[in-house]
Length: 141
Image 1: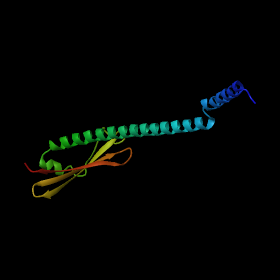
Image 2: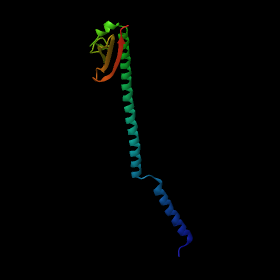
Image 3: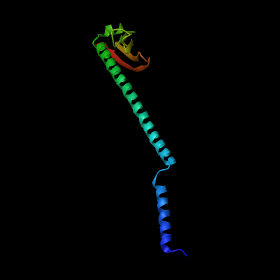
Image 4: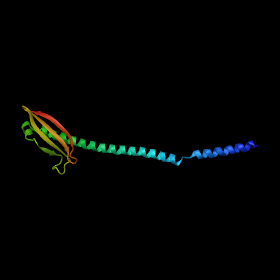
């Protein structure tokens, strides 16, 4: 028969080795943790670059809208008969088309008696995309 103090010493030694085995992380646990962290960081980076692109596009559209507004203000200073002569005109945001980023194409036509309709189409010259169209009417004063 074994003595009680030998059994308790053996149990204590076994408990310490089990605890030591459970104390550290296994290679699989570390790999899974790294994969989860990498996935989260990749998603965050993707969202960040996407938002930067959206901010850049919004800034360009805002600039183009301001330019279209300034063209429309210049046209509002013209009298009724001079507007009809502007049909088919194209305006650029710089002195020539090669330096310009945006253009506004103007279509003017009589809608009714003493009423002109103006349609201004804003185009991004770098991409060729139509950014917007503005339609307004002008009566003889």
